[in-house]
Amino acid sequence: MKNHRKFEELIQGYIDNALGDKELKAFKKHLESCKECAKKLEERKELLGKIHSSKEEIQCPDNLIDNILKNTTRKETPEIISTFQIRWKYLAVSAAAVIIVVSTVLLNIEEIDRVAPVPEPKKALEKTISEAPETAKSEELSSVDKKNEEEKKETALRAVSKEPEQVKFVLPDKKTDFTSARKDKGYSPSESTRNYAAREKIEGQAPSIPEKSESRPLVKMDMYKPNATRAASTDSETEEPSHSYIEDAFTGIIDSGHDFEETRFVFPEEGSVVGNNFEIVLILGKPGEEIEISLDGEKITNYTTEENSNIIFIGSDSIPPLEEGLHFLSVKTKEEKNITFFKEG
Amino acid sequence: MFEKIVKKNTPRIHSMIYNMTNDYEIAKELTQEVFMNAWRGFGSFRGDSSVYTWLYRIALNTVFKYRRKQARENKKISIDDIKNLSSENNPEKYVVEKSDRRLIKKSIHQLPRKYQEVLLLRYYEDCDYSTIARTLEIPIGTVRSRLHRTLTKLGELVKEQT
Image (tube, rainbow over all chains, first blue to last red; front, side, top):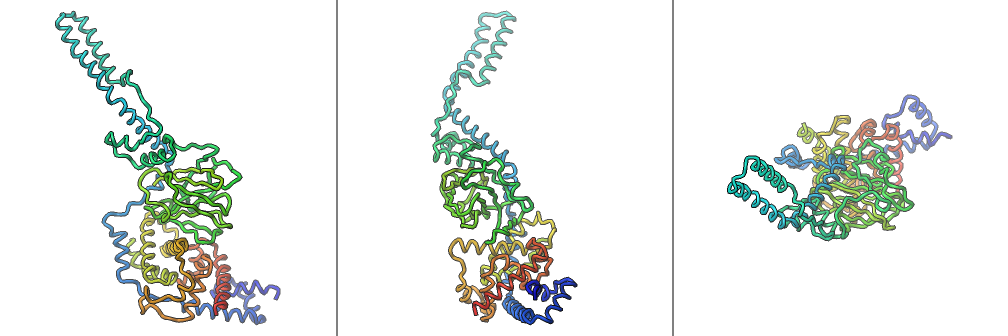
């Protein structure tokens, strides 16, 4: 009886025919002498009978297979798999692209300021140049003089083709509405720029890519890779503060259930996120923490982790529909310390 | 290829989901979601696991994700809801009112997810230990011990209910 508990654990294996030879022999021997185990075996068999009978056999709906096929293989316009994976992988490239976009916006606005003055000097110069041969003709210049004139003309043309030195570049005011400025110029604003403009409006700052700093560490939000360890995606650049912090952040079509010790993440496609059917998972440095989450400068929700959990799921139902472009998700802890990272939609 | 997978596995997956949700319409909806997710990931399905295993995994995740969403929206199906399952969403021919069945299902729903998964795969889907191990990505030894704990817990719950 001293190993009674061990034998009790073998009951299920015995029923399922999953015991090794030695175990089976030992269990059978034990069963002969242990009434308690014999009773438990019977109870277990009875329970299994009930479980089997609780399973309902139902008829598959007639149109279900057709509906599935219509939405998958027979779909006229195949659903485009989001390029999240690529975009996340090339986060750095995206950031660079933002710099270019922002720079373009800045230049466009500069262009607005110089639209008026530019044609004037150009016209004046053109006038001078067009008049020059006439003057030369009337004065019957020598061939050498003509050559000199040609050189002067070329120099003048080159000067026109370059940015005129006299044009003053005016940097936009920090509170300039970039979107409307672009609209005035006939540009349709891209989502990324619009979001930056929105952010700029809210924060009253010129758009810039958040940089790593002590107060705003840049948390790399990476795709969770099923076979990768979590430590690998943990932002190594983030300093370890004493308060709550984001240990990890990733996104995907996921489900963790309620048992965090066995959290598993399964993607329909490894490393990809499709449409808006995704979640963002934040793993905080400590449990029981309340955080405020903002998207593109607008608060979307407050979350509080459970006392024994440090994981926060932001479901796609909590996230407004995202359009193509760069998005800005901000997570504020109780200590009002922002943690910023990029999310591309 | 995918069409064949759909035709072959839809009834099985639908039945599995129905037994997990007890709602005919929701089972239909979630089954579609499972195959749409599978379709999106089909390109990267390397065949490391069997199609069944792959679909089970997606189905389990889809159902538990649905349950979590319900819980978040405070619309979690309560034990009473399960107990009082009406035939509203369940055509009469599919509903066989048996107190034992209700009791068992009610108790299964009270189990932690990891226990439900192993139990459903073993006794509803009739998967062998190695299939369960592959589906849940756990060692075979864990399957056996977990099944033991699951059934011990379930037995206690059933006793409490009765």
